[in-house]
Image 1 (cartoon, rainbow, N blue to C red):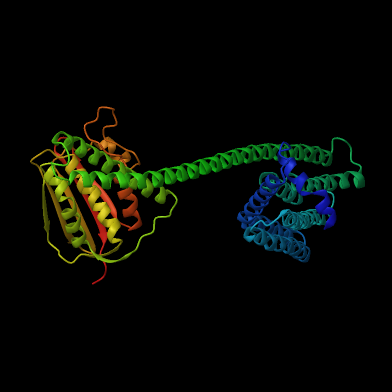
Image 2: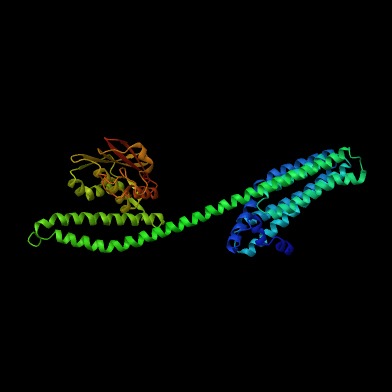
Length: 465
C-alpha cells in the first residue's frame, strides 16, 4: 500500500489534473471531489458492468468450458464486490484531512487494479482455451472494459493510465502469442487481428485524453463558480452586517427625536407659535417613515440571515384581522378611506405568530389605503372554505399590471419606480409579508384590473376542530 501512496501522492494526484494549483487546502478539496466523483460514477455503472461480465461468462460456458467460465466470473465478481465496498466507504466519508484522502485514494486504486487484473486474466485465459483464432469474445471483453475506463475513470488520470496499461498489455499479448506460436505469413488473418488491435488501442487512448481534458475544464469551471459563490456569500454577509449595524445605530436617536416631536406637538399653543405646527407635523411624519424603514430593513436582514424567530401558537385569524383594522383605522380616516369588514366564520383557528400576522395584515391594509382615492372603501372579509381560512382585502385603487406580478413580492419593488412617483414607500412591505406567510405555510395571491382595483387573498391551513 505504501508504494501506491508514494506513486500517487496527493500533490501529484491533484496537479495531474491542473498543474497550476499548489495550495494544500485546494489540493485536498479537489482531491476529495475527484475521488467522490469517481466512486459515484462507478457505483452508477455497477449493474451495467455486471451485465457485460455475465454475458461473456455465459458465452464462455456455452461454447468453451463451464468450469472455466465460472471460476473467471467469480474472480471478477469478487473484485467488483471489494470495489463496491470501498466505494460506499468513500461516499459516506466526510473528507477529514490530507492523510485520510491519501488512504482512501490508495484503497480505491488497489481495488481498481485488482479488478483490471481480474478482467485481463479472464480475457487471456479465454483466449488460451480458444487456441490460435480470431479472439472476438476476449478482445470484446477487453475493449468494453477499456472503454468503460476511458469514459468513467477520467477523474483520476493516474488510475486510468494504470488500467489502460493493464488492458493494453492484455490486448497486445492475445494476438501476439498466436503470431509467436504459429509464425503465419503477413497476409494471414492473425496479422490483421494484431494490426486491428493497434487501431483499437489508439482509439481508446484518444477517447481517454478527450475525457480527461473535458473533466479538467469542468473542474476549473466548478472551482470558479464555487469561488464566485463564496465571494457573493461574503458580500451578502457584509451587507447584512452593515444594514444591521446602521439600522440599530439610527433607531435609538430617531426614537428619541420622535418622542420629543410627539411631546412638542402635544404642547399648548401658548408654548409654541402656531406657524411651527405644520413643521412639527412634517417632522413627525418623516421620523415615522424613517423608523418604519429601519424596522423593515432589520426584518429583511433577519430573514436573509434566517434569524427571524416565530412564536407559533393557536390564534384566531378573525381576531387578528379585527385588531389590524382597529390599529390602522386612524390612518384610513385621515386619508378619507373607509374600511368595511365582513365575515361568515367567527372561529378561524390557525397556527401562527400573532404579532407577525398583525404585521402582515397591516402591510396589506396600508397598501390598499395608500393606493385608494379619498371617499373609497377598502373591503376586508374572512371565510372558511373546507380546511382553509381565507382573508381577502379589496380596494378600488390604481390596480396592478400583469407584467408586475413576478416582481411584486421582490425587495424594493415599486409599481412606479420613477423619481416623480405619486405613491411613497420602501418597496419592502409585500416582500416581508410574503416571507412571513411562507414561514406560516400560507399562500398569498391577487387579482387586479388596472384602473379598477385589486383583491389580495391569503389562504391559511385551519387547525383541526
